[in-house]
Length: 236
Picture 1 (cartoon, helix red, strand yellow):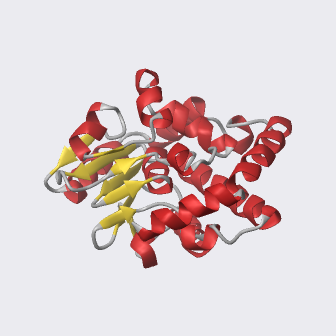
Picture 2 (cartoon, one colour):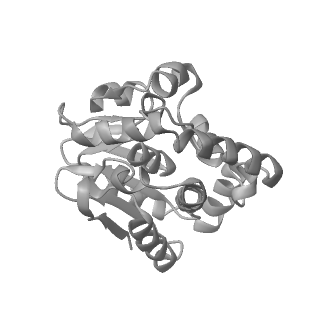
Picture 3 (cartoon, one colour):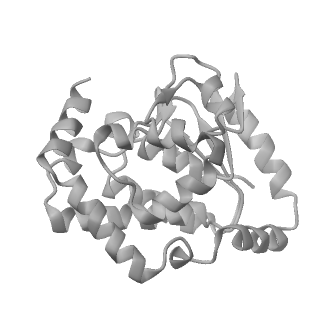
């Protein structure tokens, strides 16, 4: 049976501590069953809650980024099949969440924007999220997708490897894929997924290196320039 999780949160399902805690609890409840993640209204997730994040000082930012990494790793390393049915915008953290899923299908709507615009905001990816992004985005598209910080329509996102499919009915498309993958021997699926992705967060970045790189990322996230960019993004 497919376990469906719907993102339903203010500001276009922006990721904050409350939403991430809810999603982690949902993953624990799913307990290895195939999981489908989709959004509500016209967004999958427009990214982090920049209104909140822009207020953080150094210690609060480090705690938040640590929590964000833990959440994304939990989705990425989840033992069962996970699909994202992208019903609307999937930007920055919302795009990362989609990349953490095993299968990603978006609504065939050219108005939808999908992409990783972190560099445009002036921030660095936290180290374990950087590992996930660099693994999931095809290497030949790293420069345009990651460094270029563009936002793409679904067809272009598919061509660049951010999506596995584009559909008029992404929910049914995702359910069909999860039904197929859910029928596979799940012990073999889980073991092979661990072999591909690792067994825990330290496989995404060792602790000693992680502390140094996360400290460096925090320094970038709390500058006045970055906070001003976040606030400007909110006004658009």
